[in-house]
Length: 203
Image 1 (cartoon, one colour):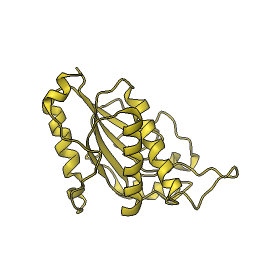
Image 2 (spheres, rainbow, N blue to C red):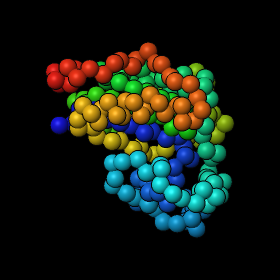
Image 3 (tube, rainbow, N blue to C red):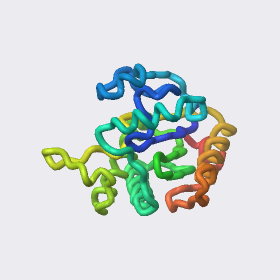
Image 4 (spheres, one colour):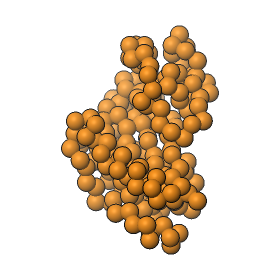
């Protein structure tokens, strides 16, 4: 039985469609990236970030993107958190862990009536809304002709389905400690609640 979801939602330009470690993409929409390999669609539910790859090629490919890769500041991270909090209130998501880093964020969320993809879209939508509302969208310099800003997020997302209490606790610990891997402090967000096994027995 699925108890929850571990989301890895990346900023624009962090993970390219032809990343040699795999991606969500079956096609490459920007022709300039074609010399760096075909789309790398994979069906794994596990993160592939730790796999070996040619870092120089990946950096070179990113220089060809339509917009500069997004890196969120601490101020922008707080706006993103407010957006995630808004989404949680609107839909009743139970957030057990959240870590917002410059190029991506992790979240562990309890199983919900909504499917995993719809939840991810909701989180990104509300985070973007708050960035726009507070004048902090990193894509603010690149409005399209219709005035709409490009999304600061990658088109898709990773989600790991957590099917046991042990896996829930492992994912929560991973997310909580993720900032330390980038030399940052542990994060505390007001919408995050402790994971209790009895919470899941009621679902």
